[in-house]
Image 1 (cartoon, helix red, strand yellow):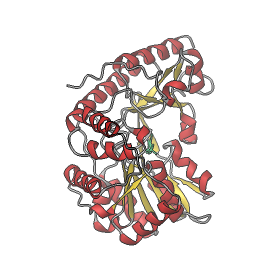
Image 2: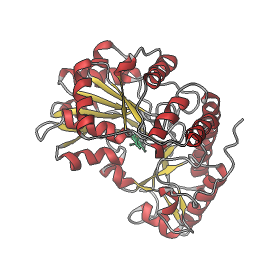
Image 3: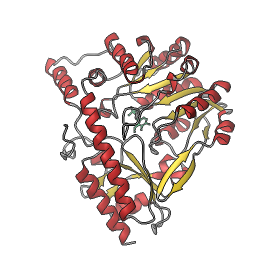
Image 4: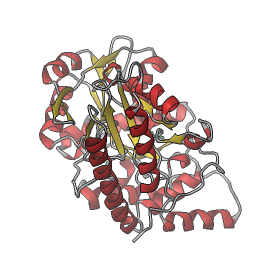
Length: 386
Ligand SMILES: Cc1ncc(COP(=O)(O)O)c(C=O)c1O
């Protein structure tokens, strides 16, 4: 069993999570985990360092075969190795796709609230942002979210690209095959490129399973750019390496040309880490991680339910991200500001995920239980004083 209870000293590193706020603030914001990467990945990186020559590297055929083999092993999804394009991360990956598919007349469709970087496509490219907010349901203090098909159908007509987040950040949803099928059909009918950001697809809680959208049919696959990476799952996001899987030859050609135009070159260490992470050698570590994250999720939900009256939250099926609603508490203004000031806990401001995030925060529970407990206790004490 991997011991995820060990608390590392990340203040001695360049960690953005741990250096952004003063020393007395506990960071529970940006989406990386406070755990070392699996031993085989670290061993591979040590080997590369020991070799000593740090020249320019490429994504080798063997790496692309490894990515394709992982899709087959996990989902029975048959992908040709040549369909795999290496990218400098998933944000770069969907930004490239937007450059191909969007224009001032054809916008990017998002399901809000959603990962803050999705909202930057409109700013960076000057294209319209079309929003299809989820319908929210409350059961006791548990929040759940469903697709509003009427809005989705209306908005997809004006889109050039649909940027799907599955599993969803910050809501932790794994979309059903039925929902994926319907979303894909509407996109194809309206000639909209589907970009499926599946970066969280291996961070499954409770033994849940996942289906890549492009696996649903050959026709859907032809209209889809699927983005995967080892970065979230194996906690190597700082190495910036991801993959766009593009089965359609013509679409792939346009995509690769855009990658070349932007001069996006993947870091050599990222390529090494990815090949090892996706090889299967780290799957025991991953099984342990999922158990740990599931227990942390349960602890979070129980703690909030039992100790923070009026607070509502998601019970995520995937990811290490909780979504907490403070609109029914006595907190005035932004709960992010409130907890930063009064609890010395840094969460993610809900508003950056869209206007539905007003009064909400995202909490990262990919951390040793001790830190999660500390953070929640600090938050509870601050809330008790309201
Ligand atoms: C949905 C989603 N996509 C992409 C990223 C970041 O990807 P990258 O660092 O590879 O650009 C994140 C990080 O939180 C994320 O949650």
